[in-house]
Length: 303
Ligand code: SF4
Image (cartoon, rainbow, N blue to C red; front, side, top):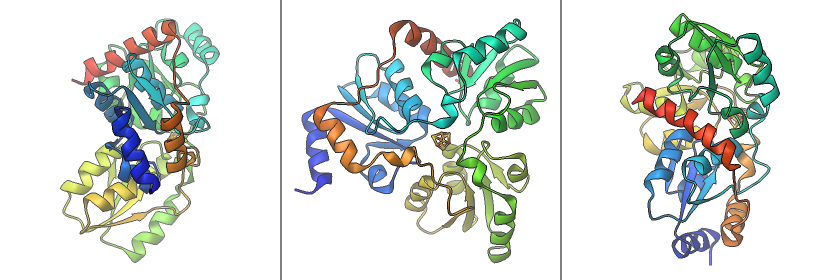
């Protein structure tokens, strides 16, 4: 029996649902019940009332959020090595240090943080709703982490003072994009629309026609009449973009923009994790309760 058939059979038998992030390998996206960004997937997990197991094919912090929001379900990560380096950049000690410096300033954290960090913030945000969340926060100065580029993007959009914590946090994959590469591609495809993720540098954002999260890029590409798009985000998204828009052309702004952490999940690892119900992601109750409040506050502010 083919591996894919074995996974499908196992999924039925164990009442499992497979959720895959937009940056997952194509074969994982194709077998998944849902493909999306981290919060879209966590919400899907909450809607899946019958499911007993969630295989969250993504990286550590996303599986943690799913576990926090779905405490009654077993959340599995196909590869335990799939850890987001940006999420590791913001420790609880660092948050405490900044809170001590700015005791009256609210802390807004990108969902790309570990649960232990989320437990020390007032509210979370995603790249899709960061501007809305910051606008809704009743303060003109905000501590924001861990992505420095997203902090800069939000500061420019909202006019508020955004203090990045740490001062240097970044996504190594999105940092690979350079405006020179886009300019070269534009010479070849002058009509192309340039879509850039807000985790990219300001120089990259300055050459964008559209700046948005992966889910916003999917919507924009579907609704825009352009035939060619240059895309500056992790290469996995191009599979979804091409699948959903077969008549349009999508070009990665830099061929090497691959997140090695996301790619640690393979069909084989997914199968083994589900078969053996291993790599269960759990969050200590006290941390989960506080982190859940920060996630729920985000849902409240954006609804
Ligand atoms: S693409 Fe960047 S932010 Fe996303 S998991 Fe990889 S390193 Fe982390």
